[in-house]
Length: 232
Image (cartoon, rainbow, N blue to C red; front, top):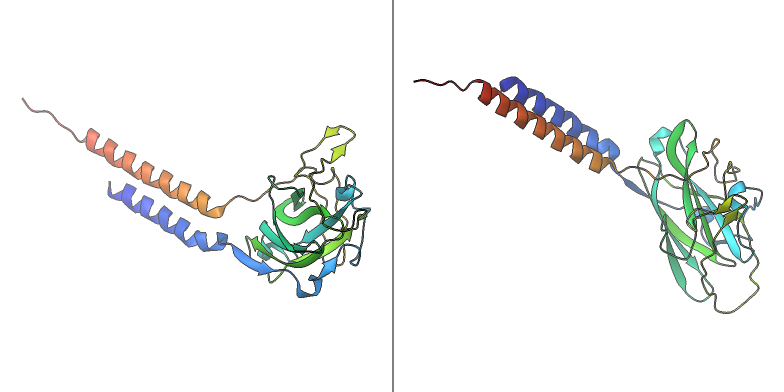
């Protein structure tokens, strides 16, 4: 019983010490990339993630610079102005009218450092923030692909459905498979074809603590059962 209790306490302490390494950090958008339009920023429409960008939409590629200490994107909150009012878009969010996707750094690196978003053409990126799993200072707008705003006035968000030769894709996944082309704000290695999102470290830690507690309890119950004796 004593050994089981000590082992459980030691494992729980190790998990507790590891939790701060999984803590999330909120970082701002690079100040030089605020108040930008897709047409006025560095455009790279050859990025394969923009292959299915509708003509009346702008494509945006954001990147998290730095090494492993920067972690990866968990969520982004981006504020645009549509010419009349500010609109805040959350990435990822499959429930809104703006297709988006997160992609990892590369096939051998599961850090999610690429974020893509499609918005109606002509919007201005006002500001933004991101929650990341590491300790980066900021994130960048890497490059864009400008669409054509053929209906000046009050923009009406639509829900375009990107398609590929193999069939329709989810509106929450811009483009098809391929490698994003690094832009002025940063870049990355070859990407798998499917977007992924990170795993919450806090949930993993809590599950581990629950399993440790259950193991200790079972060990104690078995010890008590083994020590039961009967007298006549």
